[in-house]
Image 1 (cartoon, rainbow, N blue to C red):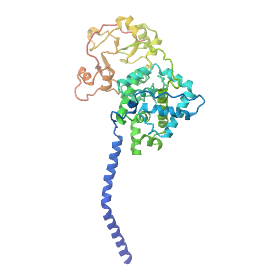
Image 2 (cartoon, one colour):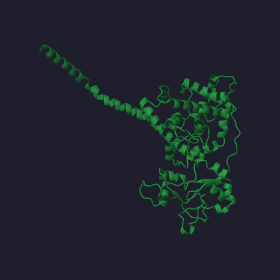
Image 3 (cartoon, rainbow, N blue to C red):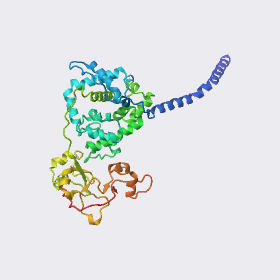
Image 4 (cartoon, rainbow, N blue to C red):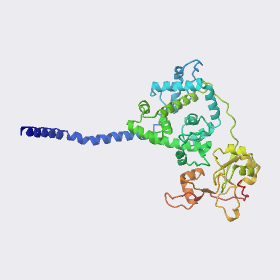
Length: 428
């Protein structure tokens, strides 16, 4: 009996202690809520004030520094790194020493150890950089993102990754490419088209910048390499968006950590191109071209006969064509001189074909109709043809806020008609 009474007294004492602690226990859910709320604030895009951007404050390229001697090691490049960081919205005082030394080592590898290979990369990049910079300017993105293809593909437009499935200058994944309006199939892969791939990559970078903030270029680069969803999950696990905490504590995978080092090293190299003697002679750009679409499958050989240009020229202008025949309504490029020398090719259909124009087969990029394929959206189609979604809906009498379109559906993508008939080119 005494043992039972003793246990009862012990239980009563425990209950009294818990009763005194219940206010604190009640506060635990509130503390957890406040913690998640603080994390959500960290995840929200940060928009700096007008004087925060170090690149805008610096304004000018970094002051010229003497080039390290050829026999110098990576330590000699740290000064170049520190001088270039403000140009890329990075405060040297906030960049950890270990990262600056890793960047210096990578810079030494690029510009000294493998200098000839790096110069070859820059030689390939030279024709594309004006196009890339112009596209980034249209999307109001920083110019320094133009060097991403150096790290992704070494500016090889036909580069493909057999394991991940990434392809093109920007190494876009198939799902990402389709989400931003590119056609990816076994016959046509527009990721291999430098112009369309650059447009899609610029849209993707703008989306990443909207998510992670315009003043967080390293977050944008990490998301481009690791994926925006994966980076967000890493931030949630780390309970901070501090990029150096994510880097040091290995919330970022090794591939992404190496990617950040490589990209910043490339930025520093470009900032000190004169000092490091990285100037290359840009080869002439490809001649101007026009685009045609056909309402039926066609081979490049048939188009070459129609416009009277060498087949090799068409193949060079259309790297996105993988297999022939080319599907209907896929733009095919021809030299602009072909249109000038053959005025009969200047056909612009801007309304649905009429019975009188039933034989018209050659259509420029402002062609009349587009056939919907799987994965298409009204926004992607409108962007491809330079229309607003509202205008596209009006042309096709589509009603509702989000009208449904289905593969095989033909949409009108232009507004006025000035067409002349041409005989259809032979398919083979």
